[in-house]
Image 1 (spheres, rainbow, N blue to C red):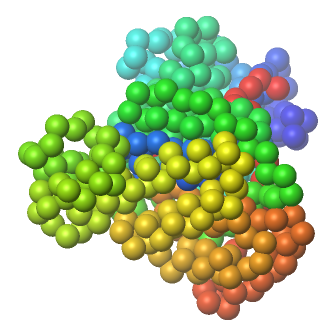
Image 2: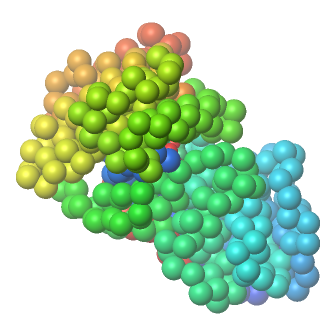
Image 3: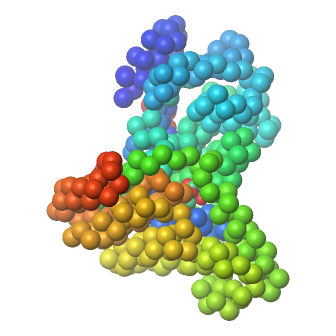
Length: 387
Ligand code: GLA
């Protein structure tokens, strides 16, 4: 891959001096969905697929961006002295947002750059191609300008950029799991204080399969921010009757005791999901540690039901994929993953049933939805690196 992106870089920007080649992964969340902005737990992992970058600093202030995934857009030019969100700047708003965020945090970027990207995470698939680009940009800036920031701080700066530059009120899960990824491990992260633990994912005799629904979506135009507001309002209502800082502090029992303080049926459902999903995540990690993979799978399935019925972020495409998966032999667990409203599902499937799974779920999806789903047997990889 290094050679492919370098060759393209030289073709686009000329072959004049040394360039750096970098990589940041995509991520998949195994369980703990829509809990990260509710002070709950998540359990994501970085993947071996992700985004590659070739970078060369410039003598001036200009930023010249080129993506091999959007070749039709050509070179998109910007300037460090004018870092603002522009719709027509398209995907470059992600790296620009991170540069802006570094400046906001007091890190001065004193040279422009030529930057070429290539992602082998399918765009809009729900595997966090945008957070991958954000963490990659932060990692490059640290390397080029010697900024004193940890990977965890790069994740926080990436989230800050997403929230305040790109206008998506996301939590910390995506950037954190990408910046802190560890091969063959998922990250059990408590989003209330960012304490975390790596848990080995040794799926003996099974694989993680991601199924992309190919339903196009962008977080910005989804109902993501609306869900977040509903949870915040529910929290304020609960705070009238119980002293909590986040929904993640509630057990199922406490939630049932106090839920009548929430004055709207829809908000009760949203908050219920946040509370129960957090508890499910804690139980799931415990099950995994005790080698109870079947129990882990059942909790994944329950997570989907809750996202479908209480949080209402699945939609016919994701439900079709997951329900088809549940009907297949050898499926340990299946659920939507990521923000929802399209995107993808995550499935744990026993080795000997993988081919049949791909065939049957693919067939069922095409029949019901009218177009194909994409299947990826994925591996858990490390965080960002220089190649
Ligand atoms: C998106 C957001 C994350 C998280 C998930 C849902 O991926 O970027 O912060 O909220 O949705 O779990």
